[in-house]
Image (cartoon, rainbow over all chains, first blue to last red; front, side, top):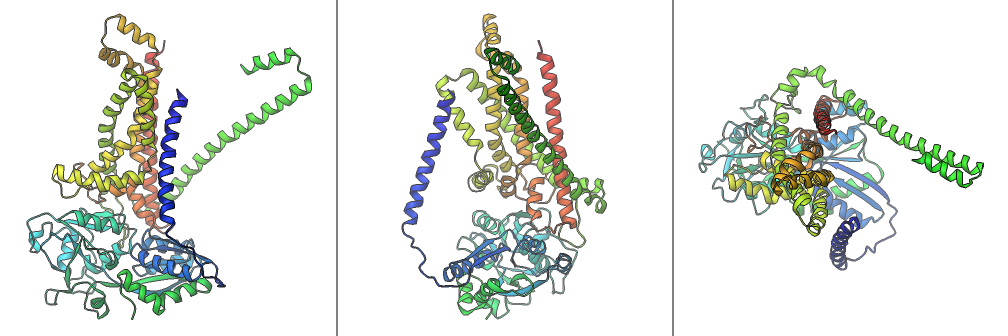
Length: 304
Length: 312
């Protein structure tokens, strides 16, 4: 009896394994091995941090590993805060961040004997997206702030349909959460700036940018703020006005570069002291012409 | 038993040296088992000590009363505010929904498998149910995100399908296999004499199940339910992805919410070791631990009472 039970489980397991391995083998047959060799660079680099920077870092890491096959780069994107925490705790080589390190965090790093060193690797236009079915096309920063603090809860209050607003944010692990809070919710640098404003308690805080984008794609009333690299055809970016007197500007590489798009931000790497060895080689590659060309490919804004 | 065996073997004519070696082996195995047992206790105490060490200081900054009953949670603001009422109520909702679905369905399924189903059906269905228990929680999260939440949203006409109800339904799917499997074992452990006696008194199958088998197995079923509840309270990935993560105290299960486990997961990556937020998150862990401990103690009490009731 027991054997029969086990038999069934084994059968299922082997069936599943067989199918997946067959698919895997078929998939692999089209790839070919790396031929380049004769490079002295070897070692491994661990990069932790921003969910926003991850797609960019992944492409850089892939390209860099193609040039230097003996280098192994591991990239993970739990969030900028998580990356900075890892830098402070000494558990990562490079921290990728979509917000600048706070003074308090610099002090904490110093207490652990770690000197944070900042390098800007690209720029991002933080896009505000809605469902393509939403007739709205532009918002001011003050309106965005009111939406995310929960003062405005219906689309008709900002000139849209009579429908409830489902405001989606990232969770507190995210640098985007903090950047958006400071620059949009609290309206940093605008006349209406108010440091006491916080996200409203009805705002959905989701664990990843992808999840937010897919929610907006499926929910006609949702609004979310992914990095430019995460914007797909399934969502509609809104044009943003700094104040009602300004022109509404759509997020793009061009508008971020010329400074007209109001919610652009630096994408940063932090290392412990100025980078050396393979870390320097990798970051030099990121800042090189080829590296910066990848930035546009991924959908972010190159440095120059 | 083993003593008898030893005596029997020595009676056959085992020489003394072999006997001594035998005893030595016995000692070794005994001390190995003892060490293994001690290790789990040491690890457990270590975890508890760590929870207290990292979590208790949070109460210097926020008094326990405010920490527990506070309704705003702004860990990355200056100065931060820590109030976990929204998370606590969210955990409660999600667990209530999961239990309300999984207990009736699970126990009914177990009763069917143990009492009614032909042997062939039982032996095919039970392993399949047990496989369901092996699904990684992130897979369940994806299913909840892609399949369930749009359904919940359109069925109930909600603003968003990411809510406590969706999370609770996914959790019920995850605790069902445990409840079914353990309850079925308990039901099958009820001696057939009981059922035969019930049939002899003229009971129908339903009456036998309801008045004889289920009461007879109630201690095991209670244990099964508690295991299921424990799973629902402690599950993290699924609720993180599906529950919606809003910080308001949820008034109904159809609102987006952030259960305690999700609150820890969505903040711990950002927290600086030893910082205020880190301590507050450990304090949530501490409270979570106390809750699961209480659930287990209650289960123990119920089981004991049940055993006494049925003691012969």
